[in-house]
Amino acid sequence: MSEDKKKILVLFAHPAQERSEVNKPLFTDCQQHGDVTAVDLYREYPTFHINIDKEQQRLREHDVIIFMFPLYWYSTPAILKQWQDLVLEYGFAYGANGHALEGKTFLCAVTAGGSEAAYQQAGYNHFTVRELLQPLEQTASLTGMNYLPPFVLFSARNAVEENRVNAHIESFRHLLTALAEDNLDVETSRALPVLNTKLSGSFNA
Image (cartoon, rainbow, N blue to C red; front, side):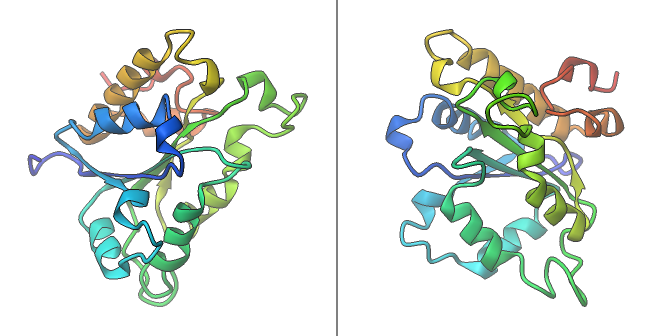
C-alpha cells in the first residue's frame, strides 16, 4: 500500500461459503486490491475464539472499515456480532479514552435475497436495508466513525442467472479505489439510501 492512500480493512463473514454465489467472488476479487486488507472471519476463527488484541490493532492500522456479509435474518452473521461484542471494547472504541476509531470511515457491503422493492415500507420486509442496519449506523456514531450507507446487491439469489455478479464486483472495485484515493464525495454519498444509488455521481472529479 502506498503511504498516501487510505488503508481499507474488509471483514468478510459468510457462514455457508460453499453456497455463496456473490459474496465469495466479491471477497476474492477485493483480496487482489492493493489497498485492501481482506480478512475471512469464519476461516480465521472457526471456533469463534477471536483474538481481540489482533483485531484492535488491525482497526488502528486502517482508515476505512468494511463489513462484508449476506443479510441473515435482517442482521449480520453470528461471527460478525461476536466480533463486535468482543473487539469494540469500552476504553478502545468508546467511553473514557476510547478514541481508536474516531475519524475512520465505516460501511457495509451486503447482499440481500429479496428485491429492492421488498425492502421498502410497503414491501414484505417493511424496512429498507439501511433502516435494518441502524444498529451498525449507531455503533459508528458512538465510536466516532463516519458512516456511509450500505453497498447492496438486491435479489442476490438470482444474480448469477441474470448475469449481474461481474458488474457488482466491478462497481465494488471502483468504490474501493475511490475510498483508497479519498475520491468519494462523502457528503453526497451519506444521504443515499444505499451507496449503489447514483454511485457514479458520488465520485469527486
